[in-house]
Length: 441
Image 1 (cartoon, rainbow, N blue to C red):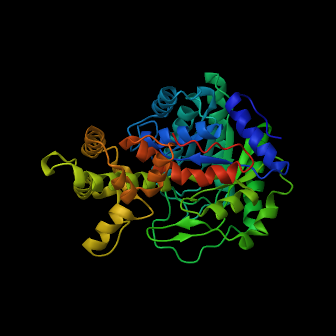
Image 2: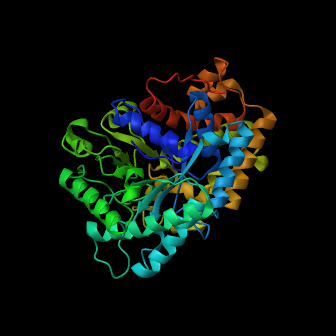
Image 3: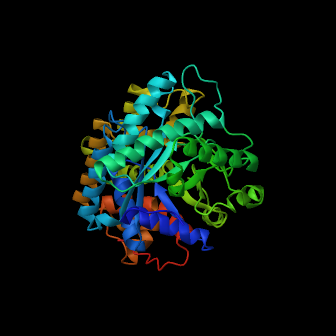
């Protein structure tokens, strides 16, 4: 069984322990820093009667503010404030850090990047994050293109020591950890995908052995029982236009790797857009931690664009938010987050900017002009009221719930519920025997 040191880690450890004991249960991790997605996740967990696991990635939140402008303590405070506003107990909020390591500083030397990574890890742990993904898989300037397991494991052990000292120094719970060298890039594939194969079993075993050895050599073997998950590739991924679905038959040998590991499960990244049956198979096949991020902001964008089309029908031109046009203008003015990802002619690039699975648009919701347009859209629609036939036209699932008395007819409630549409299959996959209420309010 996993060692545990606090309420939040005990919930994670208990879930993993139940899975290792033969129950097909798991947890899903909401990897998004957008407040509306966080609110949707809290509403979903409240309806399901579960804890909520919300993770910030090293791109979103770091000691310098990341692309959100938030440091780890800032993001913690943001999430807890949303939980308070929703009446959700703070002790059921579990925070995690995703891809914590060298990711942000791959252009620097390994020594310089490791120093920054140490500060990053300490900031997350001191802020009370209970689940820490130590990701040293990325090469830095001067490194070989692909790092060997020993190098990755030694760097991971160095960051692990920093995390343990930070927890003891600050009095926070000792974290649970996630390791792995075959780590999909944050946010989905950058290129068009071809054939994708699962991690070879021997490679997964080498990763485990290398990390166990590195921890022992660093005097950290006592921490090994708090390593809860190993990231391997189950051959699920998405790019701009396609989703590669999980194939149960392709992982038969890989699934056996954890047979003799008492406390380890697999963690699956890039599970966004997987179908409900495939999510359930992943949990049953020991990917007991499912990560989802861009798929949630994709759903949020769908809802907001649908509301923008409704606004076109209800609001005179000069008073409209023009959200879609504002987003397009700001993405063109600041192309760094999408240029280099979307190829093709201008029309193809425009379509990708707005609608691709990789959802590079998610980086722009924090832009002041975009956020102002989003708020103007919601305010406009709440002021005039949205006729039910227009909800039916553009958000039919939400229309059904409104008619059934399960959903309030406000603009923000429609957005929240559409995001929850992308979360509900995860809840069903992870908690199949729980009394999920289906409450959509």
